[in-house]
Image 1: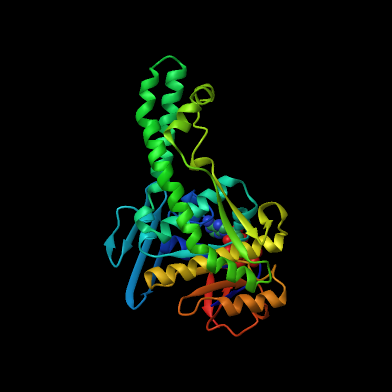
Image 2: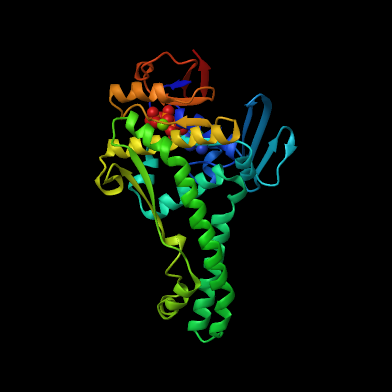
Length: 328
Ligand SMILES: Nc1ncnc2c1ncn2[C@@H]1O[C@H](COP(=O)(O)OP(=O)(O)OP(=O)(O)O)[C@@H](O)[C@H]1O
Ligand SMILES: [Mg+2]
């Protein structure tokens, strides 16, 4: 589906509202106040669709000062963010380039969310590990300040090692799943075959213990997957450092499309794809490639300021003008 309209018309707003309505949160901001129309006290996204062949109704209401409520097929959810476990939506926006060129923390966050989508049972692992590292760091500071003894660290060190090992293994597994499709898609976009390589070692108790003097001094845990990174490569070239802007964009797009394929394979349901401002930076040949490699059977929304930017006739064309959307 192609979403067209002039700058400032509301194309990004439309995609954002679809993300809020299907995932329970904005891909752009954590501050839900920004999502409510100026001068209004509430905002609501109500969606009807299908998940594979099953009808689906989603409803997210934002009330200033009161927070968010979500319903799935009429039944209230405990938290709007739980929608994520029900529907997969993948989004590309220009600032997603950070996944390749940004700091390691941006990549960790991205791949941990991907991990949660690919292995729903492991979706909480990264947060659980993060909490344990936080506890260990707090314990380190208590010991350093003489408020507690060293053996108080042991249970946290134990858990950092256990959960850290699990998290690193789950991340490697997710990267292995994504890599073949990523290689094929980067190839289709004219890059050397893409590769994802996990950069991080095992987290053994002994290694954590060896670093204890330094960790006590700094009050932080200096080893573990909270410090690991993922190398995004094209052939032997590390795109984090040596990718052009366009190549980084194609790598992010390939990652997203690779995940869409794997999600479809694993769950039988294609994710909703929201591609914002992707065409403007691609040359005509790569736009044609994108049109060709878009997953079949699922739904993809692409925004553009001009109809001609997509090199094929879209199944549906939506025209956006300030405050309105209509099918052309
Ligand atoms: N909470 C809000 N209430 C009302 N209007 C808002 C709110 N937040 C943003 N806007 C306005 O929505 C307008 C449309 O923004 P949007 O980013 O969707 O445009 P766009 O069609 O994607 O434009 P572009 O082609 O430049 O990307 C902006 O002018 C912005 O000021
Ligand atoms: Mg926009």
